[in-house]
Length: 352
Image (cartoon, rainbow, N blue to C red):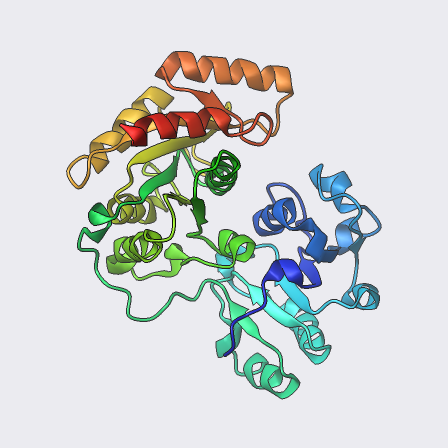
């Protein structure tokens, strides 16, 4: 298939039926933060008639509609799946909507574990209508087992790590890369999840990679880009203490062999979401990540990224002060206050 036209240049309807919100529809919210100009409508019948900006606090001027028919007058050419149903599977109730989109010559972009391109109904229907089914989560074939090649590159590698899933690792990596470029550093965001790939157009969704090859996928992302950039800012996944997602975290940490880590945490979060496990103090997490990385390649946590979306600016500043006092590291909320402190900490580390 020919190279895909960037999503940022398309006319997109985002499907977020019954779940549109900052946390409820992570893919929709993440994509709209960086490419709102390409979205013509969001589909969620429970919030129809409202403006996207009223729900998210950004991306104003985009309507929320109840049906695909209401979005068709905006001439969309892509339907992007913006939420993840349980298990990452396609609900049967969505099949008529997908069929309707394909029949209206809309490409389908999905980060689900369900692959549209393998579906007995959708694959031939898409072919008949000249439609592209992009399963973003589908990994490339023939990924290798890691062999420590990432240790040999000249580019500096930065990896975001977390106290939990969904605490801001992707946005932190995106904002660090953008701020570094503003300061004249040849930096590139490297996506390792479906939303990051939709935003940037490139990457490997590592949670869909067979476990033995996760570190190899991370290594490939580093090695394949190292000759083109001075900084590679990799999006982290999961958390080393997460009961379900620790494996992908460890694979990224050992495969990417980063020069610096940024620890991401949602302010005031005390337990792993949906689990009873408490989250250790930040200083213990710093020590844990550095200790686990050390046998493969020693590295340091050089800054803290706090997700304070639910707090006022004054409350966020107090959380940042406490995090800096507890860890001795610079901290910030990259959305509220920018990533400058983190870029400076990284630069000081990698220059040494």
